[in-house]
Image: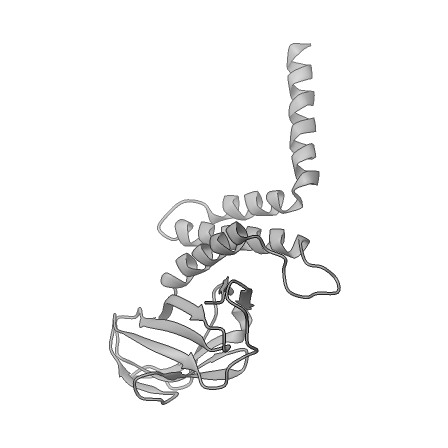
Length: 196
C-alpha cells in the first residue's frame, strides 16, 4: 500500500511539474539523448540553450515578437550561448556584444588546426567586417587566432539593457580550406544577449 501511495505521489509530482514546465520533459529527453563521452558536454550545453529558448518563447506576447525575458534569463541565455559557440568548429565565437547604435560585434576564433580563408561572416543577411582591415574577408586566418568582426550595416538601435537575439540559421561563415573552396558553416545556437 505504501509503495502504491508513493508511486501515485511520484506520478502526480512528475505530471504536475510537466504541466507547470512544459519545456522540462523536452530538456530531459535532449540531455538523455546526449549520452556520455567527449561531446556530451557540448550537446548538453545545446540542450540547456534549447530549454532556455523554450522557456522564453512561453513569455512572448503575441503582439510583441521580442521575448519578455528577465535580467537573469538573458544573462543565463547569453552565458549558455557563449559556452556553446566557444567549441564550434572550424570557427567559434568567443565573445559578442551589440551596442546602442545597433552594431553587432563578434570575436571570431579559428578553432581548426589549419590556416583558413574567410570569405564572409553574415548575420541575418548582413556581412560583418574585420575591424582592423575594414574588409569582409580574412586571408590567412591562422589556427587559434582571433579577429573582431562588426556589422558594416547596423541593425535597429536598441536601448542599454534591451535583449537581442540572432537565430542560429542566420549566422553563416563562408570560407575556403587549402583544398576546398566555398565551404559553409551555419550557426550552432542563437546569439542572445543584452545591448550595451
